[in-house]
Image (tube, rainbow over all chains, first blue to last red; front, side, top):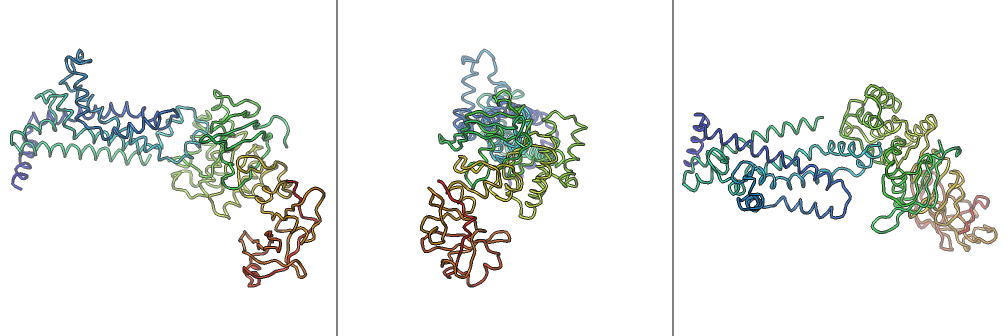
Length: 232
Length: 336
């Protein structure tokens, strides 16, 4: 109990005193998870459209892969990206390993199947008559896609939230491809791990608490956005 | 009515599902301004036929809308000459007015005119007061009215109606059927109308296609098809009793040459003292008029139209013996 109270006190002190390093880590966490979620949404939503609305052989297989991807171990994603970006790897020349970009790539790889799977499930749950109705109104391909996306907007919102949730708490891949370099690739999760290893539970719990506050704030923002989308 | 350029022409239409042919229609035509009903029991393939004709399902064969062949690259344009009303009104998650406006937008109607036409048609269908409500918040009958307003607002030359009133209560259904009849006549819109309700088909359609197992059983003028089935299957679907040679002999029905089975409408059979004895098997409720099903000594079942109140009489309970007669002049002889 004392340990927890100490952690809370430490978190409050870090936030109150305006610890530059903590603010910088929190900002970096927001930027990297935000960018990863954005990339996952930009890649995942068109993929979702193709999988959920297209008619082609292997459609079910692709959806099964996306569904299986929701359980894709972050460490494996990190390993895959690390091998690709390693200096002697196929994309080593890009010099991205141990940079925030490497972290964005790895985390987007984790979030994309989540976005695809949740979004596809939402579209498939729309009444079949609705698809016929939209086409019967004379919709061309783009109008059809727009109206289907509009009808499934809540599911798409949930899909993006799921993608964000999948990466914000992730540590394995971020550590592997980011390297937890102070001032460069250190984020809230990767910063907490070495503190635990050193036995600095107070600082680690404080970082965890800040991460929790960050997640709650982002979720509250997304939930407000979700309610607005629902009313539209 | 069936003159000029046909609104819809179907030739050698085949629809396959799971490697099985579910629809096979050699020929079907809907004239300009004409209403054709596709009448059949549940599972006959009415909706599938309608969806294929509305260019919403892939199908083999030829479909032409106002004499233009529905090739893949012109299907969106052809669909914009038509509108479809489904059993499920399928309103979009937006306001009722926007539901109509979005259809108009797809037909290239400008923003200002969209609003005017949406309000005009919501008013004509009696749902103008719902314009600002969410599509999902209105009742089934109201949703179907909005769906009709959405369909008519785009001024379609051809309307597809897939059992549009199947999900609403009896009174609303009767009112909407009447209103639809008036609108179709006023707008001169051709329509292909799927239903399993004989009276709807009779009220709305000039011609009827009886569909069974995806194939047309009989095609003709509505009143003629509904009164004179040509086959045992058609007769059974239309609610006629099919009587074999033994039953015909029992009831004193004299067959015409070469046929041995008679179809008897419930209205052509009656209970009458001195008639042929039959045993009551069960009663069936209808709207206003019910049916008493009796078994003849020959084993055939005969349906007799009766007022609902009469069916409550204890003398018509299952197992009771009743005397029955059939009007010879109203028996329909079946060639197949």
